[in-house]
Length: 102
Image 1 (cartoon, one colour):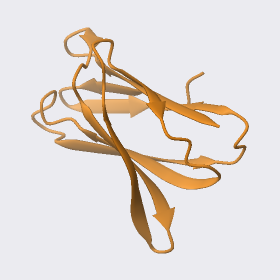
Image 2 (cartoon, rainbow, N blue to C red):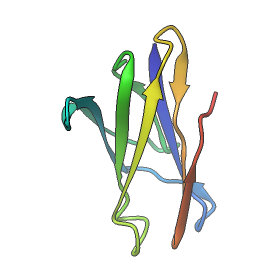
Image 3 (cartoon, one colour):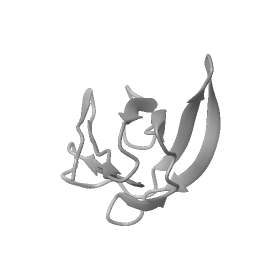
Image 4 (cartoon, one colour):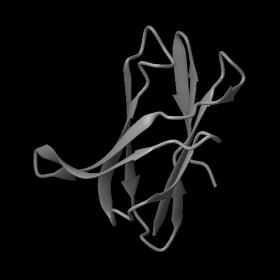
C-alpha cells in the first residue's frame, strides 16, 4: 500500500505549500502517531509510510491557510493494503472538502 495527500488552497487558487501533516493509526480506543510530514511547493506529500489495513487519519495543521479551521482531521479506512490511497484536502477560508483520489 502507498499513501499520499495533496492540499489545495481554493481561496488563493494554488497549492498549499508547507502545511504540516501528521499520520496516525487507530490503536484500540486511541490513536498512535505514525509519521510527520510537510507539503512541498506543489502542496503534496508523496512519501507517507504505508500504515496497513485499518483506520487511520491525516491531521492537517491548516492555521496558516485558514483563520477559521486551525486543524483538519480526515479519518479513512484501508481495506486493501495492495492499493494506493490518495487523500486530498481542498481548503477555503470557511469550508473544506476531501475525497478518495487516485
